[in-house]
Length: 188
Image (tube, rainbow, N blue to C red; front, side, top):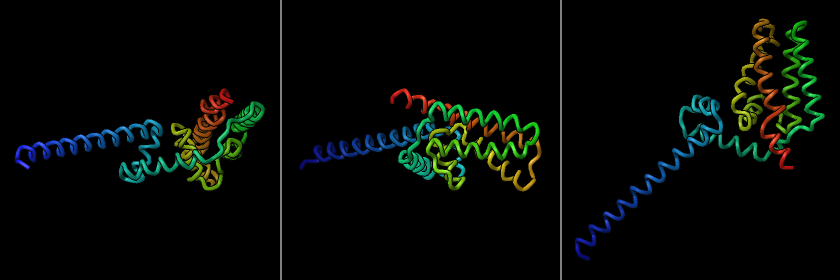
């Protein structure tokens, strides 16, 4: 083999390697953008928890796969109205007994999640599962839940409880009338 052919082969191999690396970098960047877009603020939370992009993305993708195997379903119109009425009652009860109303809100959110098909065991797993379909409000859920825990210990002020109700309402409304649920109902 003469030297010209050898040089051409080396140049072709190097060029293919550069293209392969470029494609790999592009695909990684695209994957990151898709995960970040899907999970919104939850992506930043995962980055903080894991300290690196690879760990955060792996965690969020594992959540997504887990939730894909759950039977998440829309509420029937009667269930939707029943939950909405219960929520209105909890909010009205806040004026007279903020502590009990906040506990009711926590319970209602759990019941609504269960009715939609989310497992309701461990709180952190519940929040992780909800983050897949409701990434913009899951932080509200966490904040409300932590205030509810402080409420159980007698450490939450009325203002804290008001904030918890606002946080719970954001998730409750998203779970109750989620766009995804409405799209599923239309398809059926």
